[in-house]
Structure formats: structure tokens, C-alpha cells
Length: 186
Image 1 (cartoon, helix red, strand yellow):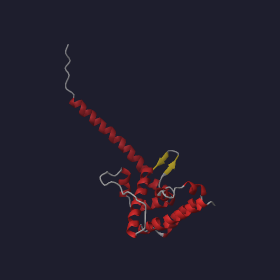
Image 2 (cartoon, helix red, strand yellow):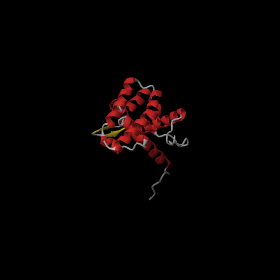
Image 3 (tube, helix red, strand yellow):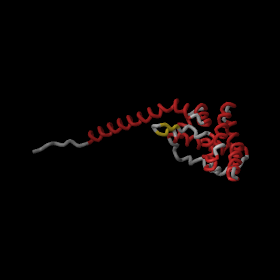
Image 4 (cartoon, one colour):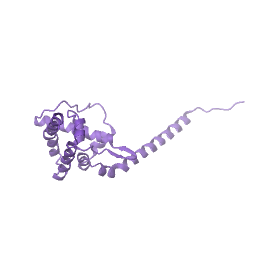
């Protein structure tokens, strides 16, 4: 094992023990859920190629490692929930930064965002989710998240398309009503 891999493993271990696991305690993660999370981390640590590619100074990558990719669901039709997964990561980073500050644990600067910018749709969804969805994210249970929300997301897209179509019909009707009458003269 190279020194670079050993150093990265130490960095990962420090991040998990000092910053990530205390947050999991605050989220009241059960022993079974914690075992799943630890197994995700161990599995990824045992993959030297993965560890070699990992930037241990990028907290987003370390959270992605601990969640085993989170809830990003990939199948033959494509990838789903990337935006929600990113919102979960941002939410986790924000909570971690606040907890580190509270506990006096040093953490590199992390912006909690600009209060004058409206949240994205994914951020709004994550804010509305409860413990069950957060645990799905933390344990990397993408299948359960897909089963619960996969069809909903497709339904939402269909509803959005219908709403846009209806809005364009209303807009067309308004435009037609506003056109001046044209008299045909010979």
C-alpha cells in the first residue's frame, strides 16, 4: 500500500470521526443504520483505485463516499435524483459546519448560501423530507428511494408538461381575444 493511500485513509478516518459521525449521532441514526454507513465506508476504503482518485479535501466527495453515492439511481433509462442528492449533500454539509462550530471542531470554510437567493426545487424537496428520506440518503438506499419517489418524479414531469401546455393554450386564447377585428373589404 502506498504512502499516498495511507495518508488518504487517515484523512478519511479523521473526517469521519471528527465531523461526520458526530452529525450522525445528532440525527439519531440507529445502530443498524450506522452499521450500513460504516460498511459503505469500509467497502470504499478497500477499493484502492477509488481511494486513489478521491480528493480527501473535498467534503462533498467524502460524504458521497460515506453514503455510497447517496440516492442517485441509475438504470437503462438514465439517472435520477442527482439534483435531490446534491441538495442532501449541501444540507448535510451545512448541518456539519454548524455542529463543528458548536463543538469547536475546525472545519474549512463552508458557505451556507445566500439568504436572498430562492432555494431550488430540489432544495425545497429536501427541506420537506423527513427522517425516512434522510436515512435513505445517509445509508445509500437508492432502491428504496426510487420505489418511493421514482414514479412520483415521472408523474411530476408529466404534470409539469400538462400545465405548460394548458398555460400556452390560455396564452394563445388571450392573444387571439386581443387581436383587433379585421373586416374584409373588397
